[in-house]
Amino acid sequence: MIPRFMLVTGTDTGVGKTIATAALAAALNAAGRRVIMCKPIQTGHIRADDPEREQLESDYSDVVTESDAEAVARLTGIHGFTNITLRLPMAPVPAAKAEWDGFKSVDDESVGAVPSGPDSSGADSVSNLPSAAEHVDFIRRALARTDADHVLIEGSGGVLVDFGEHTAADIAAGLSEGENSVGAVIVVRSRLGTLNHTALTAEALGRRRVSTTGIIIGSWPEKASPVDRDNWAALSAMAPVLGAIPAGVGDRLDRIEFTARAPGWLRLS
Image (cartoon, rainbow, N blue to C red):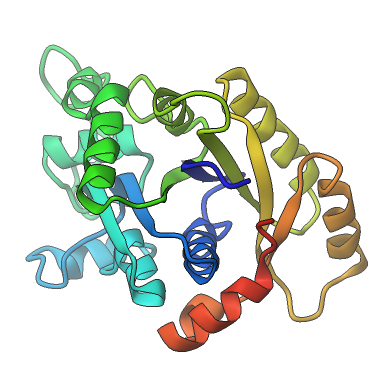
């Protein structure tokens, strides 16, 4: 059973959470369910017309002009909602601190200096970020506007990334409406090391009263190695493996192809 509120988290940055979120949305839509996606905090996203775009793209190789919500909408057509966007591709707290302290180029001779002022710890940035309760309210308002059956909540990086004295798991726990109303999908790698990372993520979720609904392998190689296949089997002992997303499909497929194929990648029942 897929809960109403589903946190899509990962064992690391870059494991394929966004494409897995899109695949989940497409599979649920194909089953007749109405789905929206919410992103509490987006980092590393700039507008195409950002006046500092050239400098940001020079300094940060992974800054993007398409947000995660926009990518999911491009692939599936569902509505996506982002609560706060920060331009630098960092964890939310340092990204917020850099944003509100004023962006500095890596060529700036002052980079690395401790900012002047009474507090350089980032406490002001934390206070400016939404609280867990404010994120929960944002998600509930998005749900009320759309009357969706499911909300996919995409985290940022791993499950314990600091959102400002709380985590994505705390947001998910705050959405609970009773038994089986909240769950999490862990998006993982198939390669060596994934078993420990997945077990740690599932343990962290459990300590915050968020159950693991399933596991998705975020990028399944065209030529899977014995390690990849063995890890799939081992992961299934931790939680149901809902499926695997073929590597590169987020870039290769248009919406029609993606939504047609995605239900075949995942088993949700």
